[in-house]
Image 1: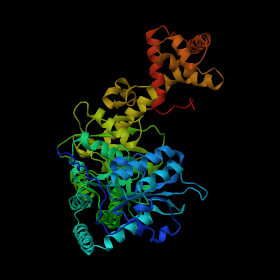
Image 2: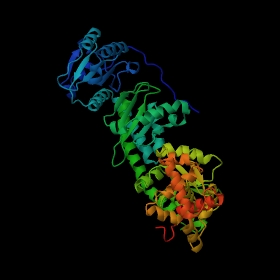
Image 3: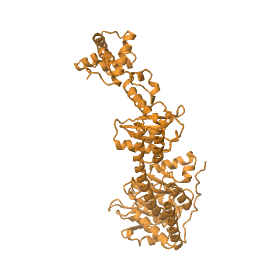
Image 4: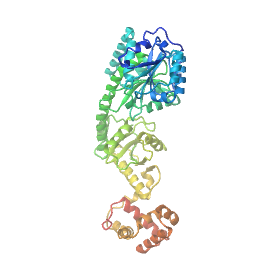
Amino acid sequence: MAAISRKGPSPGGRPDEASFTVRELLKLPQLEQARLAAGEKGLHAAVTRISVMATADVSSRVRAGEFLLAAGRTLREHPERFRLLITELAAKGASGIGVRKDRAAEEMPKEAAEEAEKHGFPLFELPPDLSFSDMIRSVMERLLARESVQLNELHGRMQAMTRLLLDGSGLFAFLDAMERMLGNPVAIVREQDKPLLSESLRSADSIESWPMVQMLSRCQPGKAAGGGITLLQSACRVYASPLPARGTKPACLVLLERSRDISPLDALTVDRLAQLAGLELANIEAVRAVEGKYVDQFLQDWLSGKLFSDHDWKLRAEVCGCALPEQTPLCAVVAGLSEREPAPDKLREMARIIRSERLQTADAVLSAPIGGDLVLVVPVPEPGALRRLLDELRPLLQDEGLRLFAGRPAERPELLPSSLSQARRARQAAEACGLDGEIVTYDRLGVYSLLYLIPSGEERDQFLQRFSVPLQQADKRGGGRLVETLEMFFRCNGNIKLTSEKLYAHYNTVVYRLEKIQNILGISLDDPEDRLQLQLSLKLCHITPSPSGMG
């Protein structure tokens, strides 16, 4: 696999040939209220870029000619650290620093001002209402305005990228072309979604790319409205530009400084292309929403038995773009979510996330909300694959308590509704009978699956009237939680001490209840046959409709 290239260190020293100086910063409309606190001798220094400090520990990432913008609180509260920072910035060849006041009465730390004056390092006090993003754009536009060649290049970049999107190449091709154009990887960071990565980040070894993906995932696109270069501690520098929202989740286009320095032209290119990327992303989301409705309806019709032939299934699957491997058995899986009865919109969003994610466990997994359940259609996996699927779905759906309930494989598509029915029975039986395990298959139910086959009728009602109904009625008359005590007694394998601990009841109270149960039913809990009959009655009562007299 390819590795992400890293740029070498930039040479130190302050550039003398740049045409835009610190003195000219004072002519910007945004700095009319700014005050030079120290370092007047350095006003002639050239400004080649302007960046925002997100942390005080940035000296290792600063470039020659860079002018820094910082919020004042962190620096003012630690004057000695501020003084040392100025020393380091001056040594790196930075052109100056502007510190925004948090309130009008704030004073610049004396130590910092003296150090800046000593090095001839311009130190500005910036007005509290200064917008860093407006100032960054003003500086970059002035830098580029002096270079008509760069402006022509910017125009050419915009034309090439616009043509690429109009040709229908797609968002990943757009990001890959940006990476080749700018010489650095790019990504689109979306709120509550994984970032979309350009080629070098997608193809790099996981050990190399994972820290970058984590860093991008921690970005907050909703707070990136200011854009600009950000210096991140223990990570590379990034330039972020917000995408136009237009009803979609907040997102931003991010350029990572990995192979070479981010130039002002690169930054303006990202700003312009963010508009195109936003339009393309909005178009993708709109198409996805429409396609999602068709896919949901297709799966609902399929799993409810409304598609009667292989021809109908293939036609609908092709129209909806659902690529499932042919000649491969499929099984229905019900997701047992931690949240009971989640809202329909949340189920639809979960199904969309599963369908759009490239899962490593299976080549093609479909999902849709059906009858209040989140249902998955999974190609029959090899042993252990459901375990790996669960491990993938838990972080994806942000549900660590997620369980999976699977039906038997269906050899033909029209048999999949039976698999869904079995998956639902597996969940119902597991919950009613207290079956452990994060993955429960229908075949694992054993004798419990036979209880579903017992039809409603006189024999069934008589069986329940003999064992379950008298206890239910005694509890209604104030009999003392008899059914609950008996179920916990069986769950604890007949251990009275453990039963009392689980019920938070006294040992003698549990003994009294068990004796009362035996008296009401005329049975002995020491008799294995009686215990078997009683357990089956309780399970049957849970998973099938109650007979008359129990309600």
